[in-house]
Length: 299
Ligand code: HSE
Image (cartoon, rainbow, N blue to C red; front, side, top):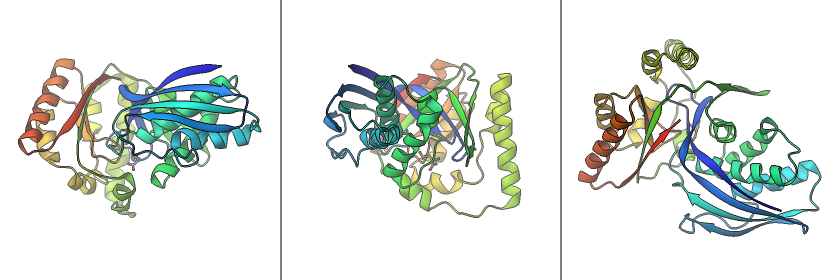
């Protein structure tokens, strides 16, 4: 038995919802081909598109490590899988690359096993994969990769995920080729928050969630503000303020860091404006000698 699956890139945090909000895009993402075999073991047959950077040891790669935990939990160590992964997205970019791989692996394995677990039950295994990749098991990339659309992690303990409505929106993504590992981007954040900043932040998160239900695009734009994380992390991203100005000048509803960066994202009502904004941002970085990838996706 074999299966081919796609797991999408995701934008975590969505500006004000650090570790609790995320959404999936249509592209880029990971493609995975997987075959169930009757000999134990998860075997990585090939990985394409990673420039040889990802570990081939199944216990160290998120695509397979989470499947190993799943098989153990289900008591199905009698079977095994051969897998071929095509990374069709940049890694270490803030687009949830490790999550996409973990979700692709888990989803495919669960299907081939006859769907013993629900998507919600697969989530903790995917979070383990995330912890393996960056030292922390947050769920704001894995949840939207698994469920699609916008997701809210209402709580981590117990784990509770809420699927939110998705108004028609275009997401412009620009990945500047600079190195910002999630591990480092988490370490520079302050662990204490001023009460006045917390009040601003939870007002914005609540407003943003409300705007998704009411399709209130103006409110959505007004809520895409982050007074806690962005002021610190944006320092790691070249031309952050200038890119934001370009995006907003082209009609973006809001602009921010995708996950822990360095990818930046902006949301638009108009696909044309999103495209124009991406081209202008890319040209600006080019002039400074910084290469970038751009993606335009409906969410
Ligand atoms: N919420 C996580 C962070 C996402 O911002 O560190 C990492 O992609």
